[in-house]
Length: 204
Image 1 (cartoon, rainbow, N blue to C red):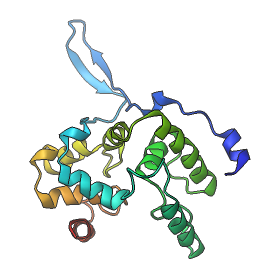
Image 2 (image 1 turned 90 degrees about the horizontal axis):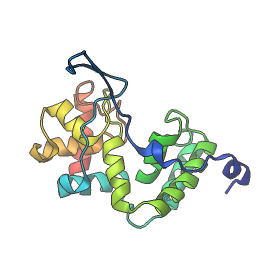
Image 3 (image 1 turned 180 degrees about the horizontal axis):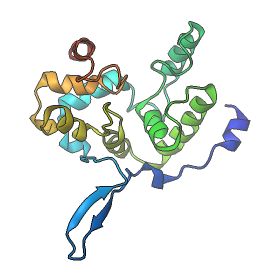
Image 4 (image 1 turned 90 degrees about the vertical axis):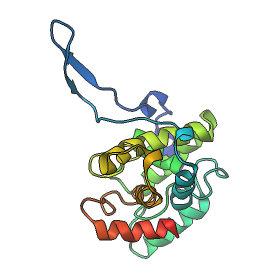
């Protein structure tokens, strides 16, 4: 581990794990006029999400989620190989679900440097020491970016299909499970053909 990066990494601030809270504007009679200052999110719990969907999500995003301590050496090696091949560090497959949650909560999601990856590992290990796997998954499913300006799985189900997660078909659940890897590329509205191809991989 790079000691200099470790020394400059801020301690885990658990308050940043919570989703942004909206502010409301009311008239003099107490009637709500507007909601501002936050994305509209429909939060859920892991227990309320279909088991088949969570299986698909974990198998595509982080198959060893229940066995690692925040980072997966095998995935990091694959990401490093991709770097050597010219893909850019972090451009493919290096982050666990824990690291993705760290990136969404604490770091610049657009940065793909080795330094940021090391910070993901440091903070991810701290997160795993602080929370259970179930708690980490719950935070992730409510915070993960799902494309089209949408965050969280339940919000995505409503946005793309006008339904709750437990009302979706297997095909629709597979589409949502495939989005987190590349939200812009697998946006069902903007790229239906790419989304369908990704869905088929998830189903397989």
